Length: 316
Image 1 (cartoon, helix red, strand yellow):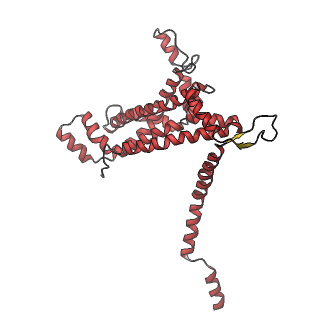
Image 2: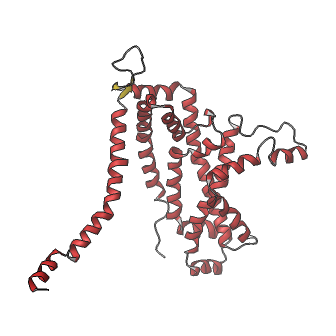
Image 3: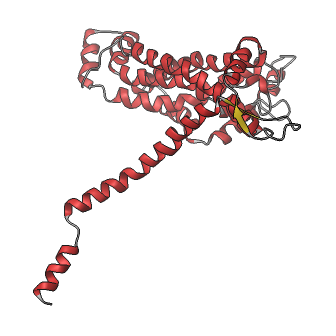
């Protein structure tokens, strides 16, 4: 091969810097496109849609089935439903109640994580019991949970009859008992996930710190609340913030445990059901979602700032 041909083939090759830039562009293309389409476009479209309505009057062919500008009509409907509609207020109450339930679940997770960390009797058995629900799909888990309380085939009702308890209720048939049962399920199914996070945080605590407390003669309770919790507080605060978001995202639990029962609706389930109902409800759901977001964002950010204050981060 001549020297001219070698020079020509050398020039056609990409340099190392060019290959690096192409690789970076390709790696960034997906997340950037995902952000532009599924966040920016969707949110802009939601904002625009909240000021529209879908014509439902069949006698008006110009607007029937088409979106037309409606001003603040959808926002007025959202506020009116919140103030006067019993089903909407119950749905909001159901959603808000998930916060104390999740915080109770967090408290139990801290206790159980400490129990496992101290390797107390049967700790390995309980480790399996706690972790098992977190690795089973939610569809199977909800089926098993509802089957246990089934009035015809479950285990709980015959056991209560054997113990002489009469008038066993329909656990998932009547409000507010069905909502309480969903909360019980959330605590039972959510313990494993929290324990995995907290156990990892507790296991990173230096043994020297625990040994020093042991030499000082502190009790288990004092060690938990004055040593362990302050050291793993960043993990706890993260779980608290995630618990706050659950108020606005819980959907599958009531959908699968009480299908078709509007009394256990949540914010996310209401939006999901409304989308399935058809395009007529899209403008109202857009306005409803934006109103909820306007409340949720400052509340969650405020709680995030609040939970960062009790203990400062400690490097270890």
